[in-house]
Length: 282
Image (cartoon, rainbow, N blue to C red):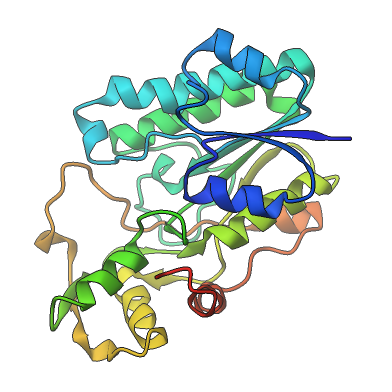
């Protein structure tokens, strides 16, 4: 029987991965259970497992600008340690990565083989993590890049919009950040589908299909919640000056799924509607 190890298991994606793998032999370790920056601890945790899914990450994008060493430890050294341990066991490794490995200057979806071009500390550390995984366990690893995640078990943009709706008459939301809102339930299911297939090792883009601006996403969140979407007003990123630059264009291409014979994830609007019905944004 295949034995699975989920790191970062108490996070938004980690919890949905546990649900997606229900009924299988799964070890779920959160941050308090496993320090991925400790190689000896990682080797001990990986022992006896056939598949490792690394959902552990330093995700405080703005804080990473002044704490890059801390972010690097989790986002780069952690994947290195897991890849080394997985290689020793000849185990599969799924490394969750991000659209932030790109600079956001593209005008067409980023292909899986596009070279890294991060513009933030967070992006640099996640790109380094990808590189380590490919060097240390590339022939048995899947790098799954995702973006704009939302779900039941963690803070996210969609929940922030609904919370703000309760205290403000109108919300200003940017139109010049474009990407793919992605439900963690869909991503978890896609990762399990990938592992159950004969798909080759490599890079896959784990985002719901379609394209949206933050403004469009917020209006859909409002409409599905029975709120007036006209309360969401357009603005641009100059109105929100943040420590870390955000990629303006975070649309990821899905060609690798087709090559592997796997359907890409459904359209983001379908996923958002399903998430709303499931109560995932409450």
